[in-house]
Amino acid sequence: MTPLLTEPGRVTRESLAEYREAGGYRGLAEARARVDGRAWVLGQVRRAGLRGRGGSGEGRPVAATWARVARATSPVRYVIANGAETSPASRKDRHLLSLYPHRVLEGLLIAAHAVGAAEVFLYIRNDADEALASAEAALGEARAAGLLEGVAVRVQPAAPSAVVGEASAVVDALEGLEGLPQPKSAPLESIGLRGEPTVVTNVETLAAAAGVLRLGPEQFLAQGVADCPGTALFTVSGDVAAPGVYEVAYGTPLRELLRMAGAPPAGELLAVLPGGLGSGPLRPDELDVRLTYEALIEIGSSLGPAAVVVIALDRTTLPNLAAETSAYLAAGSCGQCNGCRESLGQVAQAFGAGDPGRARQWAEVALYGRGNCAHPTGAARFALRLLQAFPEVWSK
Ligand code: SF4
Image (cartoon, rainbow, N blue to C red):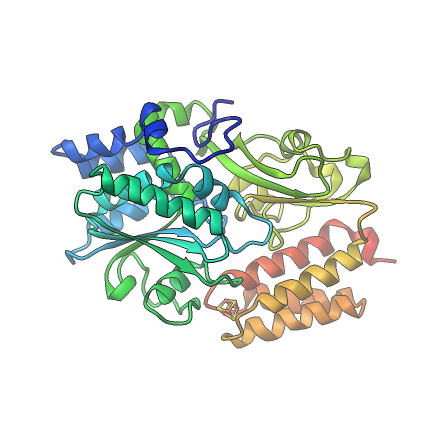
C-alpha cells in the first residue's frame, strides 16, 4: 500500500517547507493558474472517485457536492473544514491536523477555489490543543508565504458534543448559535451558513483532495476498490497492542487492519465495532469483511468515521456492552427531537433491565423515527445488529 495521506513514521508536524518539498501547494497553484481551474479541480476529484470521509459513513461523492455549490447563483459561498471529530473512538482528524495541517489547508483552499468561496473556516474541537495549535501555525506560515491569495481563513474552535460535528450543527455553531443539528428544509449546498451556499467537508476529505491534485487521480484509482478508490485513515482502539491511526486502502479486510494493530486472535474476541459506537457490532467470525461503505452496510453495520473498536472476550459481556453503549448513546442525544430522546432512553433502559425484546422494539422506533440528524440511526443500528448477530446470547 502506498500512503496517499500520511508519511510512514512521521511524529512531528510537517512544516510548510517539508510539505512543499513533497509537492505540496502545487495542485493549488495549478488550479489558480489555469483558465479552467474550477472545472479542472472538479474533474480531477471526480476522476479520482473521491468520497467524503465524515462521520456519517455514507461516503458521498465529493465532486458532486462541490459542483452544486460551484453552480449556485449567489456570488457568496462558504467552505467549512469539519474537524469536530465527535466520535469518542475517532482520532484520525486530530492526527491529521496535528501532523499534516498543510494538507488540510491546501485542500480547503482548493475547495474554496473550486466553488468560488472567499471566506472559509477550519472548525476544530476546542479540546484538541495540538491540532488547534498546529492549524494556527500552518495558517500563519501559509499567510506569510502569500498562499491565501485573498481568501479569508479562520480557525474556529468547537465545543465538543455528540452532535456538534453534524453538518447543519457546524453551520449553527458558526452562526453563534448552540451548535445543534437543524431540520433539513434545504441542503446546505443551497442554504447554508448565513443563508448562502456552503460546503461542509471533513478535514480528511480535504487532505485527500489535495492529494488528488498533487499525485494525480491515477494514484488513487490504483488502490482501494472500484467504487471506493484510494486509502483512508482508520483509528483502531480498544483491546489491541498498538492502538492508533492507520492508513490502509479501502477494501482491505478488517482482519488485516486488526493484525496491524496487534489485536488478539479471533477466538479471544467478543466483538468488533468497525465504525465507532454507533455502528453494528461484528462477530469474531466476520473479520474478513472488506472496509468499504457498501460492504459494511450490506452486513448491517457501517464504516462511520472509520473508528474501529476491538473488544476482547475477557473485557466484558455482550449484555453489559449493550447496556453501557446504549446508555452512552442515549446520553449523546441532544434532546431536541422527541422520537430520538425517548426511544434511545428506552433502548438503554431495556438493555439495562435485561429485556432484549423491548430493546428491539424501541430500537426500531429509533431507526425509523424522524430526527434532525443520524445519531438515532447509529444507535439503533448498534442495538439491532447486536440483537441479530448474536442470537445465542439473547435466547438464554
Ligand atoms: S435526532 Fe437526536 S441527536 Fe439528532 S438533533 Fe434530534 S434529538 Fe438531537
